[in-house]
Image (cartoon, rainbow, N blue to C red; front, top):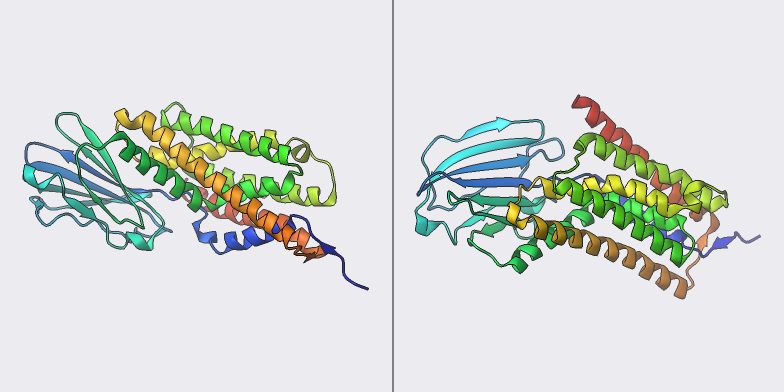
Length: 339
């Protein structure tokens, strides 16, 4: 007797989960490095390089200052539980500042960005972003609003695409909903919720400590695993009937996670509205792209009449639950170690 075959969206969970598994190590809130350059007087600047802990080790990227910047005091180094902090005092001729390039060797071997902030004695502030694909910044002084906005959009896009846990949560929701309308309501609810808490956290109106937040985000993924299995069995549940409400509730938590990629930057107050809007646009573009890719793959497989063995349809729920359990345990251990 022939084995039964399924032609539903079960391939969606399987294929995308395999992609997720190949990037399992990236499923964490990747904190950016930060360089603060503060003008002390006409020619002296304090440079503070905060290199985040990267997978439990010192960050591999290094800060390389321009040759024309002269160190005039011994560097000091301090190690905290979250970062290695190096402070230098340098002498810079005023003609050697604008146009100077800071480089970050080995940043291209990581998944983190570096934010460079300059603060001058006249109160003006400027922020620049280095990334693994562009591991250097050129200090330009004033920049146009669209240049600044484009950098924050890129930061938001980078943050969501490397936030595999956020994408896996979205995938879990897609595996539960049954209709296009339900999918639209669910994704819209998740977007609205994380936009609210992203804004509150960025404006300093609300905050959640990162270690327990990360553990709770992992727990939200663990929660979806059994719900996917229930949906596959045709069993009723509150989540299956009202997925948009669940998406909204957990979306509030995920919004604080998104905010961690922005609140660590110490952005200039004058740039705050632009940074918040642009970063959120970047996050939404990444999320829309992910959902669009999943739907396009689903359409392609259905059009090609691809068929899976019936047992394959059970795999996504168990994989989502297993990954959620793994991350929950991992992050709880990290949380307990920091107490």
